[in-house]
Image (cartoon, rainbow, N blue to C red; front, top):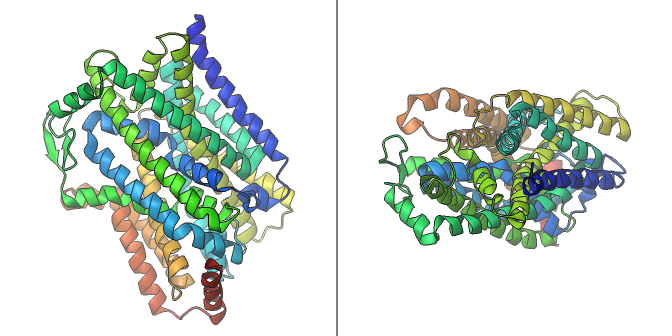
Length: 510
């Protein structure tokens, strides 16, 4: 191995070591369970914004999104990105501040805590259902991250895909177990910076090697439907397939998922000052729009570079950014260092999501299921220990689920996203904005939304035609109907609950 080729592994190893060191540093700041799970509600506006969006984007940003754009053009990737951008903004605008105030009012440090305490569910049924949902859907979500790591290392170094997944899981577990929420949030800030640097580096280098922006766009125009938002390029026939309004709506429905994402919602609950959420919203929204736009254009660049023979024609389109970075590393010491940062950026995407997901899932098991539902008495020390054990178990399950290296990061993430969006999103909106909603409606909404995700994905959608839409949309609507119908059909919430709701609204304006 020559000196230049050694730069990439050295850069990646240094990055991984830095993440572990951060975890060790922040482990000293965890004085109780609230610190470990929610950082003691001490996050500043910049860390809140960037950690939320870094944990949101995952490997989907640098692998899934460019891969879809590389193959089929702008329609699927574009409408999905538009839906996510709108969803991001609306989530910050409507949910963030109200949830921050409400969660503190009811003493909630996890999402299941919030739902249970908001509706004064003394039997903890709502807490148990929501904690179970987190465990069910975070396993495939985490698996998608490990899959991205495996693809990355096997492509760069020729490592065994499965070995790479295990190594990635060990590093993520190491800093998340030690540092908890603060470590996850601060590393997410660093990872968002690295992700941004990776996107900028690849797009500038790619445009230069492809012959300029005009050359990239001319190539895109030469493929039927590639630049269209109403058609999708068909790789097999070379023609274009029409996108109808229903398909577009189903892609825009990705934005609905934000209202129910636990690893993003927790950032709203953790910000130090509710009045600084506006600053966080502006930072987060700008970063999301720019980063997704750049990621899609990288897919366009990759398509032309493949045709030019600069990078090989890919069987796995999700590795296009990896191939461009490897080509970059062949052009001298400086570009090899930049390529190393690009690979670190891909790792950052994966790790920033996986750490947050693992932390949310482990806290759900330890804090909500063991202590809340089953009433297991644990000290703070025992509670954190149980959370760490559960975290490792979930990581192992994630590795098992991602064992097939041909699995699609984009498809796995889309299913888990639909699961959270349909089960938690409607309930979160009802909890924050509808005083008449009650615990029975919340339970019905969660169960109905979760069941419909599976029924639509593995049953109804296979009928094709108008039924072949993203499962999040029909499941979200189903959950909303269930919440409204069951809440109105059962007794109104007690005066204590509605008074608490009114106090939260009053605190919002202070």
